Length: 171
Ligand code: ADP
Ligand code: MG
Image 1 (cartoon, helix red, strand yellow):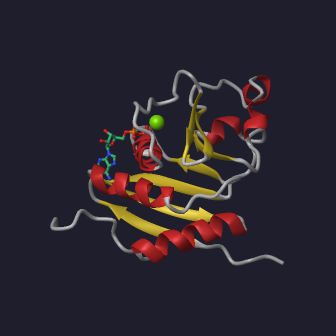
Image 2 (spheres, rainbow, N blue to C red):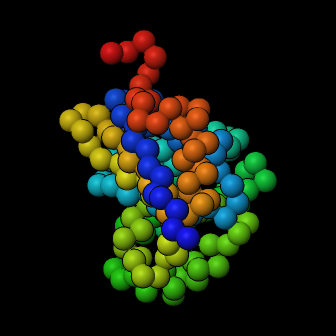
């Protein structure tokens, strides 16, 4: 049976708001989740991923995977893989690198530039689409599985659907 799409939109007026969304998302993860982080260069994909990974308890640096393609974290009893396929010249590079096996029921995968591996990377449970809005950003979340929907529901129960993720005390 097709369940209705579950979506949420968050205004992110500053970098701290993007970080806060990443921290909230960290509390809503479950093993097996695949999250696509879409959006232009500089939209805030790595900022959000970095805050999420730190919120899970990782104390060291969180490098952008732009050159390494993947960074691996074992945090909060989760295997978390942070990918960035920006440098792929063809989607088949995903298969050549053997990344398919990283997507399993024990791992959480965060994927920047998933469109560069289209047709090879597994479909996501959740898409986080980040876009510029003047100097600020807007995040649109779209779930495409029960797992993704439950993630958005957990998130909106702590933040509130469609409510700004703004820094308290700022306009
Ligand atoms: P991406 O990974 O999407 O290419 P990055 O996270 O590396 O983007 O860079 C995003 C840039 O935008 C950083 O300089 C960060 O400080 C800034 N930024 C992140 N979120 C916001 C926001 N909500 N409003 C304004 N600037 C932001
Ligand atoms: Mg990035």
